[in-house]
Length: 127
Image 1: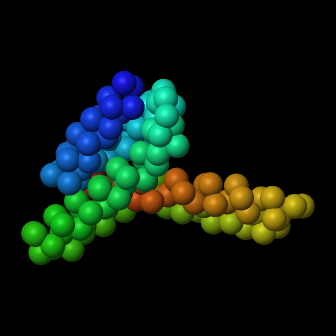
Image 2 (image 1 turned 90 degrees about the vertical axis):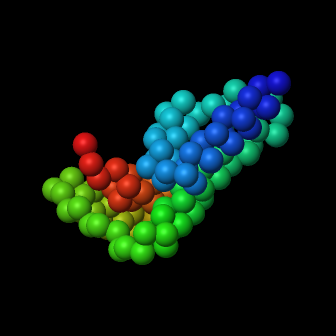
Image 3 (image 1 turned 30 degrees about the vertical axis):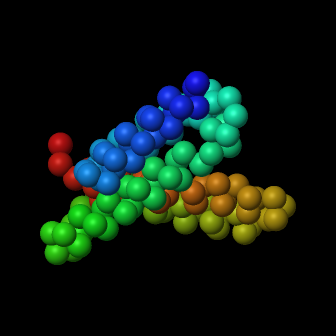
């Protein structure tokens, strides 16, 4: 029964992400913080809920760009520069580590965090 509820919640989030991509970013935050698929019982326990919503948000954003025929606005901020410097430092220290093969797994995990942050940076641009 919980799986059906999780599928319904995911379907609502996907619909909102396709309709308004910035709502998809909010859905990504909710799924990232609450991790509702951990409460699933059978197939939803291993279902890639976050990946499905991320794909829907990306598709909604690309459709919005195509529909409005505009390029994305780049909003530079000091936090973005610090994030890029931090990621550069993580890459340098990964290849300089005592056990670089073990550290590369962590680098992959850290790299998976950046695309949703990039979506948030592009889509949430007004207060």
